[in-house]
Length: 190
Ligand code: 5GP
Figure 1 (cartoon, helix red, strand yellow):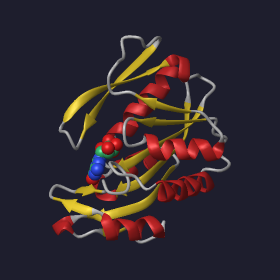
Figure 2: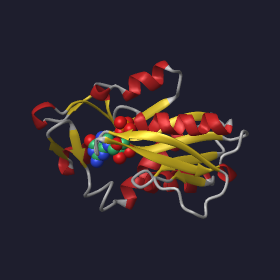
Figure 3: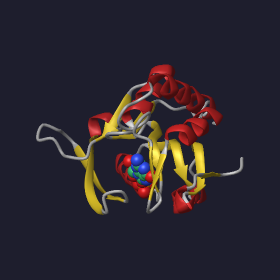
């Protein structure tokens, strides 16, 4: 998506270790106009997948996910990173965080994840695919189907997208980055 790529070039910042910081428009301060346009693009790319619910993971996935849910008029549920004491019918999994360098538990109430659900998973970044694997695990436990996975930014060089596509998932990423070597942003040729 050209608009997002231009914005990344304008406002994104690279950090050593293959990290891209987009905290001035995606994951700290947010640009709701861009967020809405990105959500419209997801809706276009996933039409025909018969989705009935949007799923994401806190915190940075929530903003794009709720925009998609708003346009599609579908409920949005987010996976939590701490189990609230009041949560009922809890399903849990474990996700390895690449940015934090450690495992963390994730959970969702089965009340909001049903065997009849066809889910669209939305997140800000796809790197190694660990968050996505956690969502796949939770969906499997509940019997729900993952009908699509949409990411604002995919870091192709970290391999998560290849793995998910090989496993047969419909993955769409709005900006695909082949390399961040020497802090240069190289987009994937589309
Ligand atoms: P994965 O689970 O695919 O390895 O990594 C995806 C998650 O890690 C995203 O939810 C995102 O929060 C975080 N992440 C991975 N790479 C980056 C990055 O380059 N920049 C930022 N801001 N977050 C990242």
